[in-house]
Image (tube, rainbow, N blue to C red; front, side):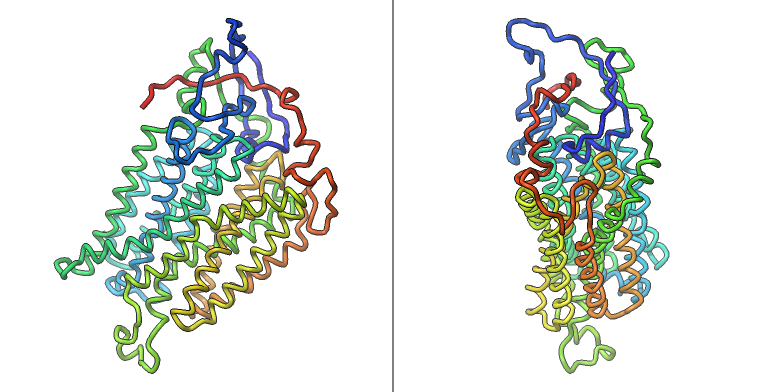
Length: 538
């Protein structure tokens, strides 16, 4: 029985650092020399893997759906997509819901706040649950259980019931944690950044698609007035709930927790004392409390948390208010909205949702673009390059958001909205491109604090919009906070990696970790024994 306790390794992926909170005990038989080489016993995968990184994939084949690697990747982003679709299925229908439930502006704002408040606590819980039960199980539970409040939202008959269901729907937003955890244990450090950016970006796309699809579903349900608007919005919310259950059940049945099997199967093998392979997880001497305390002492952790609040937090708040902004705030000139609001409005609920979807659709490429530009800058200028890209991205977001807040015409606001969406998504990518370097030993804790900052930010921006009242003025004030986050890059210093003002040595160029680490010979790294559960092909 060999016991391997991970040491701090700056070349490891974020997920690998999360695993440093556990000891991995592995028992593997000696390889049999049958003349076919040392690796003749190894399981064969339909994708190239690195045995030194627990058979994580070293490439991403988007057109491949084979188990375990690419099947898990596609289920990860699809499940995240449908989770965001369900989470933000209500805002596109808010013009109708507000009218039918007789909600005022403050009550709508409170419901928006409730929808992001529950996610803050959920993010803290989901990470350890993924460690215990595996991301596949947790993601399936989040979707299937989360479908209940989405469907039950149609039962709300008053303000109180509506706020309660929106609070519980917000828990579906915790699927981001399971998604990033899942892709991080499937892909190696060479490609995990791209895999996480693609999965997160395509998953976030669900919020944009729901703005595009949900109003059309409502129009379909209420076609020719066979169904009233009050019943129509309630029936419309059944569609995302049904798809959440279907995707949750399919990913549980047809995917895997890790390249070497499901967590539950690996533990059963360990209990049987299998002579073929054995893996158990148990808490190590480094616990979550210690990790959080160590990371919280670093100023850069809180700078990144604030910057994520000004990127992902802004994104969440914009998704909550955008449909009503276009539906209620753009009116015909010279028309008295207090006398007859319907005649003064330029856009219908469906058209407002269509325009609003443009913001979320930028997730298709912009988040991955931010991470990619950060990687390119790092190859030439190390951490200094990443921080410079971060500052430029946030400056661009601040400028485009301010301009967007000043535009009073629909035709002028649309290109501003698209540019703003590109920058805000790029900022989320550049932020998490820096996170793994804050603390190589406690990357998981760093990710947790920074990620929670996004939801705390959304909560704060919700109160800002409620207090100010005017959405245009709120966007203007919000741009000031984003501008402040850009300025904070000038005082960002990443422990052991430098700052914007650091001189870049030749050894730091062309590598995320420096030439010395990049040139480390593979044979000098410890070899991880093989652990995999045999499964039947689907």
